[in-house]
Image (cartoon, rainbow over all chains, first blue to last red; front, side, top):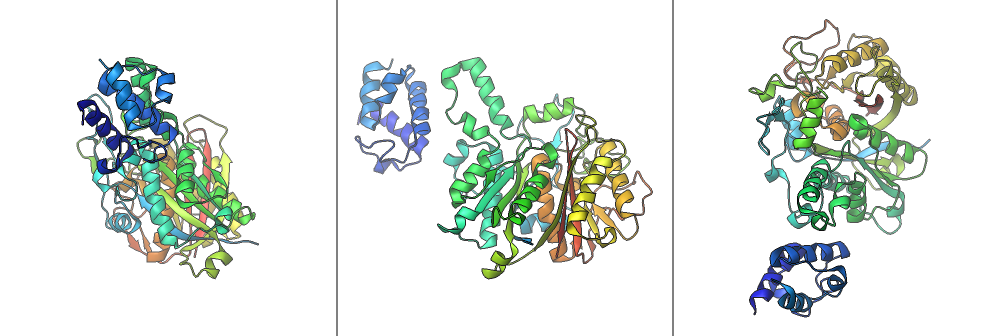
Length: 78
Length: 409
């Protein structure tokens, strides 16, 4: 598991209160992990904070799984 | 005519995180007032409050992840609501949930959440504002959360009448059931304003006690000559009100009845009560009229009694005028738990029903030198064993809003 994936997973566990073992890389935050739309806004804010970057709204909308987040942050974080 | 009874009680307050523990502490003359430790109060004129330790909040009822997304007043309200609903034994189903509502208010709501987000906006900018900021601080979101958690689809609202909120919530719920708009209401108030902005705001209005910082438990002293303002408390009180026949049909435990509700406006001043006590007098008179009781049938008054210079004496004046002063008992729970603002009337309603149930009248702590020669027994410092059938509970709020409820067995 990459360092980025590890950090993203930690944020998801913390914010959504799900067990780490239940998170697959293609788990959808809303459909599979019980997040609501406000939770996903907060998740994106936490990713920005952790990775020191700004995620524009159109990009944020496309981050629906753990894998989406890892892919985006690998390409865009400082 | 539809009659309204109480079938469930719940509270969390500075004397305990449930009805039985806090009632036991109250009648044993314990105080819930202590020095504020959650934030630095060195520069504050008032350094004491009736705080609830975080360890008292049962996170099996509201888990920590949930608590992070709601202001503390909502957490406290959900804790008390859970106790009251479980106590009532009411199980909502697809049919009865449509006739079961929620009316829980707050005086100020998510003040600390607003304060914190305001600082974030100023210091870190708009992108750092939490998406949960607004729903975590809005006052009616507590009623919303309770309805969602327990599937209550009837009337859903929240009164906001400063320190009279809890009493108005119960009275308005009583009226809804009486007028056949609901069969059951979860009602009351919650408050969590012991935060920098809350303490500094009430201090600036010269409303808080600032003379007992070194002896916190002596700070709240209604009708005592050394009183210097109220001591703020936090917590929640929730009652389950139910139409009598429904309660009987499901064999619910019945604590007693809501018999009358009165409300009035002073039309006088934003923070001071009208000087002749006329507003409070008219609220009590209206409640008495609805209850169809005579003044001499009221045996105990759970007073608003905040420990402020002006308010205590004005309430006493109104009570003496309406009820006379012989054979009457009156005490203030605020002497032990402080002033819970929008939750005060609701917690005091819970204690009013416990008074009748346990045949015990709670004391007014610190009433060492009464600033009055009234014949009303103000129950100084120690509780009294006394059976009562009809009691009245008063709440008065900033803006000149007054509410009174009559409870009976």
